[in-house]
Length: 203
Image (cartoon, rainbow, N blue to C red; front, side):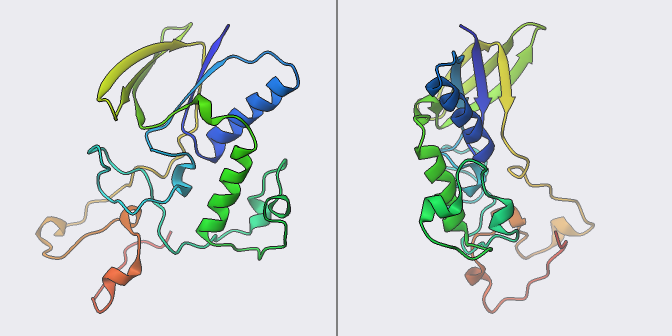
C-alpha cells in the first residue's frame, strides 16, 4: 500500500482528507494517510488562539487570527462546493460573517467525515527530503518531545502562507523605546485604548 503525507489540517488539508474519505466510501482503494499539524486542533489559521509569540511548547505561534475578525470576502466565494452554508446552519446568513461562524462551518464539514483519526496534532515537521523515489519526513511530537522519521510515496503541503510574519527593517527600529507589534500577533484592539499608535502598511 502506498503512503501519503499531508502537512497541515486547515481548510485545504481537511479537504484532502475528506476527498480520500469520500473515495473510500465509494469503494476505492486509498493510500495509508498521515496528516501532521503543529497545532493542538484542526482548522489551520481559523483555529483562533489567544497566544502570541510562543506556544505552550516554546515554538512560534502560527496563528494570525484576531478576536473580532469579520470576513472581508463574501461567504459565497468561500463556500465549499459539496457543503453549503445553508446546509450547515439551516438558515440564511449575511454575506460577511464573523470569524466564529466561518470556523464553525469549516469544522462542520470536516466532522461529517471520519478523518480526525488521520491527524497527528502537536507534531511539527522539521525536515523533508526526496531521493527521487520517496519522501523522508522527520517530525517532532511536541507533547512527548520525541523525534521520528518516516518515508512516504507522496506529499501534500497544505500549510498556507500566513503563519510566518515578515518584519521589514527600518532605520531606528532597534532604538525605538515603545512596543513594535506585527499584525500577526494582533488579537484585540482593547490593549491599545488611550495609546498613540502608528500603523505601517495597509494590506
